[in-house]
Picture 1 (cartoon, rainbow, N blue to C red):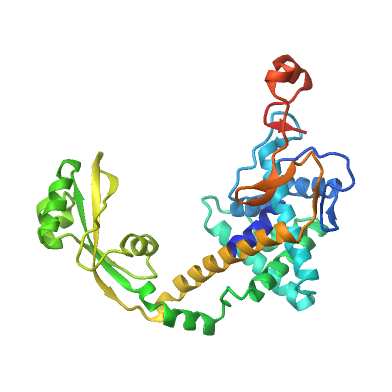
Picture 2: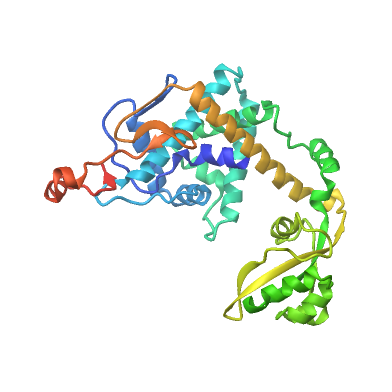
Length: 363
């Protein structure tokens, strides 16, 4: 679910002040509108409040670069921001009209807690620690902006909960899911072989001839673990490396090195890394719980995003001020595109200079 929630939250983004048009209605989605004035107020709040800016930027996967002129933003970034705002409005409208979702005070309070948790988690995972708290960040938002974000969070949570394809993030549901996917959370012991590229063919031939994992590592591996048969360690769901180990060994039989090595840099030289799972042991749910939750959140988010694209395509009527971009259909679904700028081959570079805009910036 995190990905969908993040999309709703980062619809606010714009770390620099964007010069918007004076149209009273900047974006309209199925009758719900956000005025240009409100956009300016929101962006001004982000640009002048360090805590708010930091928490939102921590959650933002897109770089919102400044434009060439004053009070401007990179046109592509502005279009991304407008697109995410459209998504938030569309989901909230769909939840209200189609799912008959009308949040009460308790539901909105839960949504606020969820939103603060998303912001806190993003900050914790960021390289820059944000000053203050996520609660303070919400309090720095203008009232309309804050109310919209909480309402959008509530709508997204309701949408995810009502999808037949998603799994509720309750302890009972997680345990039930784990019981049918236990093998996905095995503790995995692995051996490795770091092989010189010139010896890869000989390594593969020796494996085909029946040489064991330990013997292969002792004969070919440049890693110190080769001396003891390549044993590298065991990784359970609580390990930071677990996701990568699980992915790398998913289709490899026990006590067999991978057929296709990964190219790595070892001691400042190129080398081929072969990995072999040597033991898989069931992991108790208590130790696998965090990994189960992460997997379900990712799965639910993917399914929710698929539903989001369906909502945008079939249930939303979108109108956008041309200053923000243009609404169209891309290979990944409906979205906002950066506004087109005149081609220099048509108007000439002197005309572009006279207009005072760059090829990727506008006010």
